Amino acid sequence: DLREGGDAQQASLLKGFTYSAIGQLAQRAPNLFASDASIAERLFAALGEEAPDLKVSVQEALSLCCGAYVGASAEVKERLMALLQKASQEPAHQARFCGVYWVNRLFPFHDVRAREVCVGAVGDSKVEVREEAKRGLALPDPSSSLPPLL
Image (cartoon, rainbow, N blue to C red; front, top):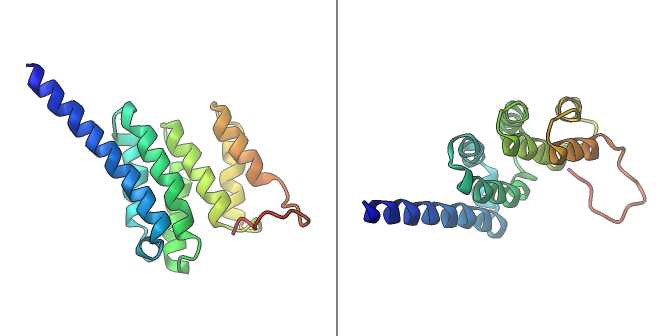
């Protein structure tokens, strides 16, 4: 009936707002995220599970959450690396893009595993994944005024 369709639409809208709120919270209170990789793991899982209309909200949340893990412990970074290596191989192109995006921002250029993720993604079928992978393979410009991608 029509009411059930409206309820499903409202639930989808609420989920989208929730994903956005998670991303905004990560920007405002990164300390709540940096000590635990489970939120990142759940968001990456959602990219493969959510309906297409919600994947944009999940991808936005992941982009906003990335910075919260810059100062994460070695243990959390290891969990994240395993997650990102897996994400870069997922069928959903959003997961592959976010995996490469995170690798380029959370791990230094000299991290071999991070560059391996980029090498694997440089031939991706989606242009945004390929371009992000190429950015991760370009030598950092020492004269750049941008902050390093640590």
